Length: 485
Image (cartoon, rainbow, N blue to C red; front, side, top):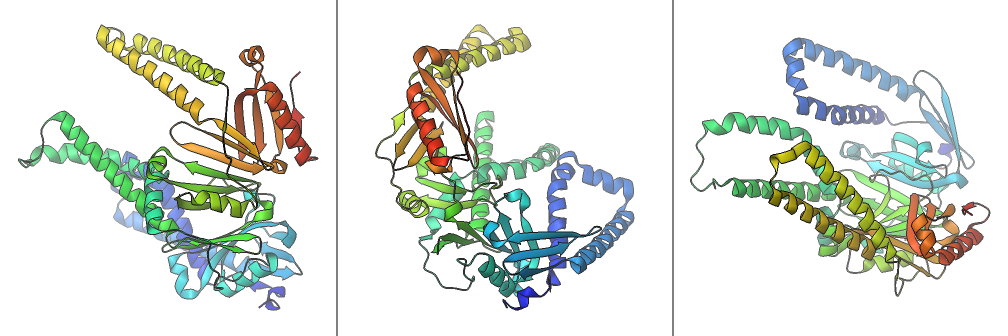
């Protein structure tokens, strides 16, 4: 197979089918909220008619098939020594070249409709980042394995038996579904259906007799409705976690971490440890109660899309410490965290008080005499409690540690997100002081990393300058420091 890769290769014919299905699913996903939320689908059907609508869909499908066939005919690739060359284009001819030394991450995806034919979607991300991603939308599994072996020799074939050093358990899978942000994704998916369901209930409920056991109290009905919604969101979140992470296993192959997961659509990703920049340990508020979190590994130019990030889900029982030592050899969990100054809590209280005052002033201008005096006092007291508790929690969750050549920074409110990276992985750093910080000898250290900016607020000014100098000394000549005079 390595010798045949030097000759021009074409996509599998099933790639054309995959392209059609992928584009149809993407268009349906984008247009579904509009059609369901505004009732535009029924309006379009009444205005056009069934026959004209079916004819239009048939013409669009024919055009899509012809375009996919042309794309398939013009797509070809081969290897020239250690350089991948791709010729593609629909109406214009384009050529891509990628050297093996510039490969950062390799991923394969095998949807359900590709499995019977042994075809996968092969993707490679260069060091330039996700924007330069190269995709072969449908090639044979053997060809994908041969390409991975040539461009990333440490990444063995998918059929190779390697003992995983992390396997997602059933308990971890369920807890990850409940505690991750899949709940928000499920709520966004259900939001277009709320208006049609509400209209349907409004039209049909008065015409049906309610059972005797159904509560009639408005507050009890609202609580029952909220319970049903929460249970539905939790179920959808678990289903989403099972769909994506079922059978998750993580193996170590010669300096690369290889993960495989997916229920019907199998995914395979690789992560080069030498190019690893930042690792995040994420615990949501519910995840902290359930004792479950997940790790996110970042590289330069990585995607913000959660589906494309290198993620280790369902980590329980303190496994994050062992996995972090695998990702960062020699890393140890910090024995203690250094808190930020208590003046940070005062600053948060000041900001929260100003926002609460503006909110109360705006509410008074809008509501006016609609609320009684005791209701205004109740609203003011609730805002005060929220500001005080929120400021205290933000201050308690903020902390940092510096040990063994690694810097740890954590922050959060109810959930906690911890960033850990080697000092030589920093891109740039700047030290800033507000008028309040200058009076107290404090500063805020802004760290610019591969996945974005991380702030370490209200630490001693001398400590901030020392950390900035140490980070710059470790990452020279890539970094630039900006320290205001």
